[in-house]
Amino acid sequence: MLRAMGRVKLLLGNLAVTLALLALFAAAGELWLRKVPEPNDAALLDDGSTKWRFNPYQSDGVLGYVHRPDWATVHQTEDFRVTVHTNALGLRGAPAKATKARGTYRILLIGDSFAFGFGVEDDETFAAVLARSLPPPPGYKRVEVLNAGVAGWSADQYLLFLETRGFAWRPDLVLLAETENDPADLAWNRLELDARRLPVRAQPTRRMIDQSGRMRYLEGGPLALPAISFPGQAWLADHSALYHWLRYRAAKLWIARAVRGEERRLRREAGTPPEGAIETLTPDAIQRGLWSGPAFQLRYHRKLVEAIRAACAERGIALATLLVNFRPAQRQADLAEGLTADCAADPLCISSAKLLEGHAESEVFFAEDGHWKARGHALVGEGLARWLPGVVPVRSGSPISAR
Image (tube, rainbow, N blue to C red; front, side, top):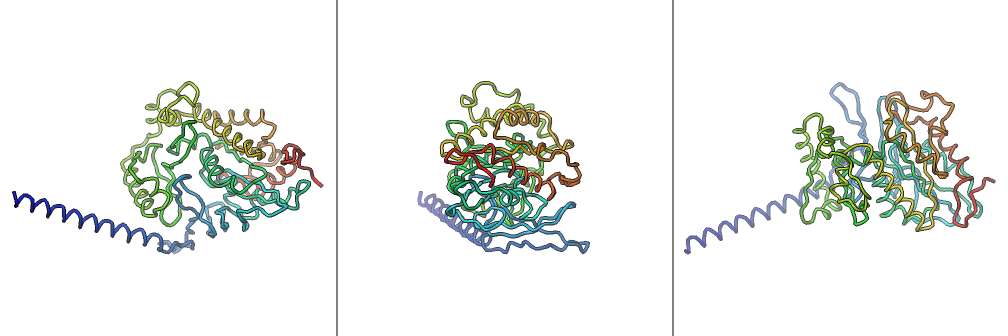
């Protein structure tokens, strides 16, 4: 009996030492990841050329990922090479404060890489052009446009951003830059939903942020990274660099085993899109609906846009929408047609196709990348400055009017 108790004590002692060592290694890893240099300069390749590290991102427990505050990096592709700056709020562009200056008409732009301005300099984005081109409404001294566009975000993250950060900055107008692939991008996130079936957390399954702040795309379908839940996971996602470092590498190992056609397999397993009011569906049914294809993706996207509209109205904030149309070669017809019809029925929505009408595709789009060139941004920003005064009310109820 005594011998057995001795073995148990030895086992427990060894276990305690092992756990203590693991905790020590975890703490050391966390400290190293927080202190390790994060280069944003050019890396020298084997052939003697350089490749710039585009690393403006950081992981976020609610939104999946956001921009680092006060960061500068270079974005280089076959089409362009530009310098990107973020301010103290983690937004692209000029310095900005959360507190709105007296006499400022503040526009908060939400969207994805088109709003962010892939391929153009900070002052060439349509957000910057709009800020320069739109005269202040009566009673205001200046116009400020906060560019909260983040590459790869979709309507779930737009809503979460507004509720967790954006509304606190007291915008007078929210400008939603809705792109034709926003509904499809919903399938790239695993959503935690509330009782209204609206997201409270978005966890990307294909876009991962590594420890140096670069976005890595994982091959495979939306289920490439399996759902794992454990006590304290939400806290780790919000606070631990080590958690995201381990998650990224675990995902890479998982993806290495993935087979081609994962997306088609998921669509088959998801079955037909779920029917009935979205509020009555289970979170699992909604997630599978997003994997089922464009029909349900568009349905849920519309619900999210309505939630954004309701949240703005509840706070007395105007909402206008810019529908970003892709060039024909990149267009997904099912989603493009539905969003175009929605925009046509909304007097507070204008399409980029209308603002770019009469200009050749090669004039406004990059050849390979597919985003707008500086010329495209200029046309969109100036077009918005002409359109907004006639359609968007200010808080007093009078329209914005040019002086």
